[in-house]
Image (cartoon, rainbow, N blue to C red; front, side, top):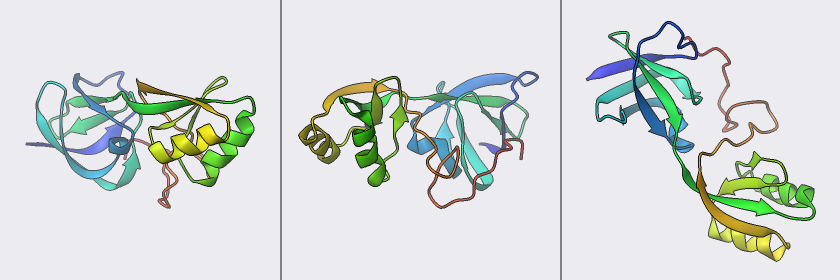
Length: 153
């Protein structure tokens, strides 16, 4: 089984041979067995936990690159006359949120859906890739882990 110990965001000179489609949770990785979209297993073994981006690539030990894609996942599309109020309630619960023009996207959650609807929000379940904001401390994940900007490590 091939091993990926590096991530690259520069695919210009790389031989991208396959893709791996990951949901939001699985784009946060340090050590994990993965399977490409065509069925080849490989191991990701990074020095530290990383939030990988769509379009980045796992560099395999033979030099090939597996490009990262985003999987569609169940989300709630949330709209309200006062989006700041709804955003405050979502943020107060430390819920990852993708902010769009007039729409907030969060993971499908029955408890949050009920609360938001009680606040007058309109919700709709959709399936789409999820790209939440990075939070108060900048881009990337905010799970108490240090963030690194460079991908070629």
